Length: 288
Image (tube, rainbow, N blue to C red; front, top):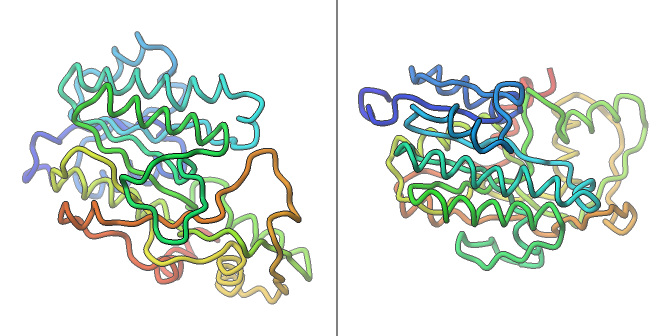
């Protein structure tokens, strides 16, 4: 990749300690790309001077860090905004100042979740939670401060290097005879390794600046995903469907988080494959 795209030879991955960041650094190493993984201890993203100093000298800056405590954001929105929006502005501005391409990872929570067909990349945002509002503001900051940006929305992430839904369900099922899981929230389970690969492919393809959706194809509910997870784990726990109103949370969850991939097709970049086939490929690694 470095031979084909010498201008993208040096990457900085902010949030390298998370599920996605860990997989992205590993994917870049496989491609022979010089990448620096920046963890929280390496960079305070809320400090603009530190960001400008640390980000200088890279060709691609990926922001894979975020405040992801969705429910806590309802009462701590200012803190979430500092990480999900203000820090994005710092990173985007610093990347633009040195001529680096800026890649920002966003979320399905910027939409209201009331659609019945996949959300297009240019669909109006209408977040219903504090977390969603801060992430929508982060997208705005990325576009405003870094003309050469790639905003990559994702959803329902799982991976080997952190806590995630499949691990939680497998752990609970190992100790219970029955699990009750919501069947009225629909989305696209997405493996962090697949998303990391997509980010690399977008940059390698010199995709036009804009917004892209980094989710698996197809769709399922949390109930359907749980059944697939337990089958992969060899667990015979009974799973029963229920509705979201049985599990009230401080932050509303989108009922429909299916994202379309037209922008990827237009850029000549293949979307991630069907969620079920990708889960089958990921299961052993994630559940190990």
